[in-house]
Amino acid sequence: MSGRRRLTSIGLELYSVRDAMRRDPERTMAAVRAMGYDNVELLWSFGNFGRSATQVRDALANTGLRATSAHIASATVLEGWEQSLDMARLIGHEMLVVPGFAADTVRSLDDWKQWGDRFNRAGEVARRAGIWLAMHNEPEHQRPLEGRVPFEVFVERTDPSAVRLQLDVGNMTMGGGDPLAFLARHGPRCWSFHLKDVVADRSRDTDLGQGTVDLRGILAAIPDLERKRCFVEQEGARDAMASAKRDFDFLAQLEF
Image (tube, rainbow, N blue to C red; front, side, top):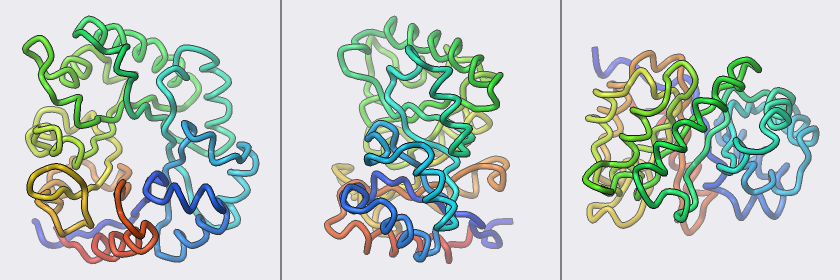
């Protein structure tokens, strides 16, 4: 029944605090842990802010954080994929997530289908290594291309046994999509979530609880939520660390 559950684990996508991470990754991760977060999503696409995999693993251990996933460049699945999976195991990742594609590689639905085929192949390799490959949605992934929503074409093309989805509820809203409707269609494939709120005109994100996204309804609709990973992400906050703290406090008390 709704109104009786709360999240037992709350993560932070480190893109939210990227400027602080550039200045001092270790101190920033310690501050994130002190806010109450127990999980972070790393940014391999940012070179882990100049730290090696071993340094990242040690920093996580020292702060008491986990990093169950990381964002990676799409090219990572095309070259050196096995080495990337080795690094993922070293750090302790469960999942590697591609956040998006370069615009010149997804100009047609056939391009999206080709990426789906590549993900199927890379995902099979990842599963043998004990890691999942996943795809994250950007706002533009909802905008029709050749009469179809390209992200839906990608989802249809990929094999659920090899590829999972990371649903960014704010990005889907900003792109004109409906996260609840997407969950109704594809909920079992969504194993990771970016919890993001959006202002009324869908132009930008905002603090959780201050926008139009039905976070309570979305959390209630996620199947097997206790087995899945939820990350706060706010991309445009003026004071990113203060915003991350407010977002944690909001989610920690939210009943659904």
